Figure 1 (spheres, helix red, strand yellow):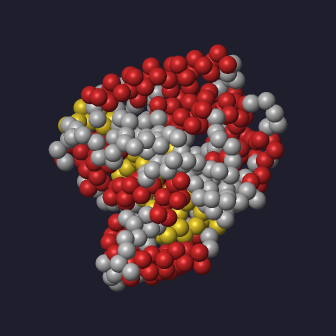
Figure 2: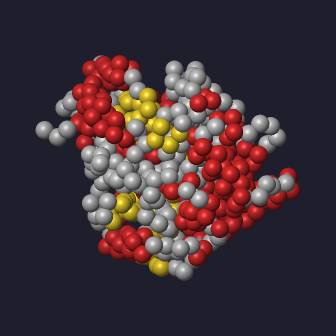
Figure 3: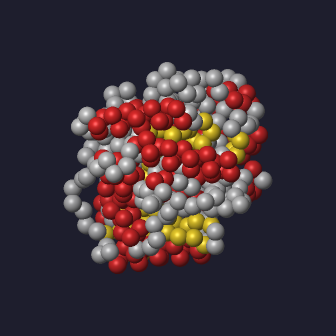
Length: 466
């Protein structure tokens, strides 16, 4: 018999609905997997087996009464530690917030519960969810299950490592500068950054964020199959009036031509040969599936988008008052925030207003481009996954990493959706591609992702490599 923790969310939910197995059996299997592999990973930093089993029992009871428990009926999932879950600390990797206990669920957590998901535990993030690496002074470091010498990504590194190792079928992540897409890439799974307003999210435990983060930060699913991303997206995207940005856009849009652009080096960024090879492989898989793929020399601007993204995002931490980075005292966060400040001079009010004004013009260019090419295949990163904690070794290396992450940082300014699709391995290092689409056209990205996934070997749960 197949270990239940190995199953996809789609398969497992179907089996639980058909009463071929129970939600409690699935949860016990997932908890056993967590206990077996999490000590080597530190992906899940807090969990309560009794609470998870009680949620599973409620799903089984609903099924026994003939009720519909929801599309994720009994599927074990994880949620990131920077999102409110009632009764748990929303630490965001911070000692400053280790006692910040949520009194209510964030909309995204509430939606997962309403969909019948069983929350296994809370996954790790760097301090302030700041880096493409996952380590903090409160919870420690998360390891990449494919190679402990590589970053698991960040800031949803715990979520991606958990999914890759079979701790839950779907992981919740957040993305303001690649924090869903990059961990999926680094751990060899798939990750969807939805359009702003697609998935409602809000933390009652803290103040509303600045306008930069409001325009760019989203929640989304990480999974081992594109079908599970579909399922996770549908579950997370249900209406919640606590998030004013939520938009009632259909999950399936109008018919679209299967036409994609392939851009190996957007805005002239440096791309390693292995990354370029993965992009050409993905394009060939799309063509085999009936897509017309046109290689283009460039896309609309990304470098300027990345500059403005950093300006708007950093403005949050540059308001008058004590430095939150110094108050937390996390050495990684202090180093990275200092490096970011060197790359992005402090903005005046006029600069801030100009950035918001320029944003609409950049978005106009991208929407016109996406009108011609419903899907754009481009790098997730210009490099294979980085050596772990490479960003704090020197300012020069940090600057190289930022340039390699251009597609991660540039797109959130525009509130556009992006999908990371894992395509294979280079030795032990995962590699994959990013697909970008127009607003609220996650369906286009997922259709292209399914075609790419079908042309290779879909990711399967792995045992952590020592």
